Length: 122
Image (cartoon, rainbow, N blue to C red; front, top):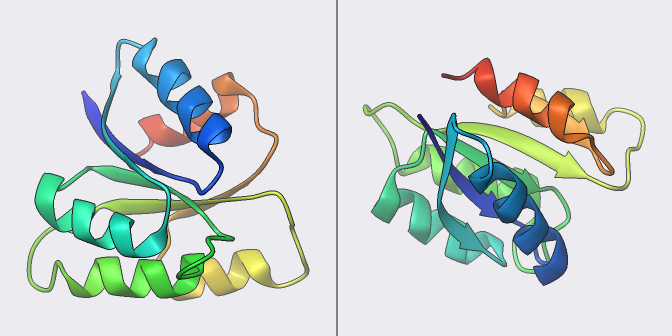
């Protein structure tokens, strides 16, 4: 069972992702956050296996949130962070992977593709 934290500032997107993921036998959503600061705190509290992290958060962008999340797991297994974004620009994927994210997906995405990516981190 892959334990997932869903982070997106759009409530409808977050709720939809949670509902889809909870409908899959291999996944369990253990928390959700609407911003970067909340995501950092929740990661330390619930210790997810994977964080689905919107790149364009209003309080901390995906890069800052990732750096803060990973710093909180110094010496301990950190969650795998997968960036989600609607605005793919040149170099953004490389930047995400360079700072420690494990994967990068553009919105909109299909559930079968998301499931495939998540299962890599089982």
